[in-house]
Length: 217
Image (tube, rainbow, N blue to C red; front, side, top):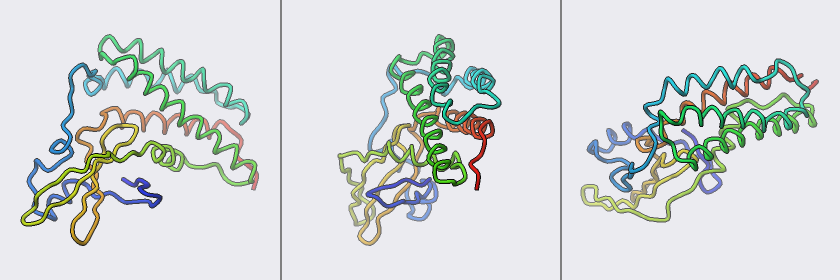
C-alpha cells in the first residue's frame, strides 16, 4: 500500500512483516489502539454473493462506445443504478442509509475522476490515465491521520503511534521509534467492501476507457 502522508508518498509495510521484524505479539494491531464498535453495523463481509450479483448489472449498463464528453452526463445514471442495486440487496445485509450513500459517493467520485482525467489527457494529447493512477489519487484525497497519539511500550522504549484512515476506514499505523518512522499497513478493521469496490471500479474504468476513442498522439 502507498499513501501520501505530509505531501510525501509513503510505502506501508504489512503488519505481519513489521511484527516479525520487531518481535511483536499478534495483538499488536490497530485494534490494540482503537478497537472497533460493530454495534449496528451491516454485515457486508457476509454479502459476497449478493455483491457479485450487482456487478453484471453495472457492467452491462455501460455503453460499448460513447464520445468522451458524454460520459459526464451518463455517470449519474450509472451511480443511481448502483445505489438501486445496493438498496435491493440491503435487506440481506442491513447497511445503514449513510453507509449506502458513502459507497455510492465513492463510486461516483472515482468514475468522475476517471472521466475528468481522460478529458485532461485528451486536451494535452496524452494517453488516457490508468485506473490505478486515478484510484490512488482519489484514495489519497481521503487520507486522514487520527489526532490521538497512542503510546506503546516496546522493551525499554515508548513508541508514539497514530492511526491512518482512508475512505475505507482505519488502514494503517504511523510508528515513531528513536531512529525511524514506520508506516505500517493493517486492514484488520478496514471496510471489508474495499476489495469489492476496487474490483468493480477497475472493471467499470476498463469498459469506459475501451468504449472511448483514445487521444491521438
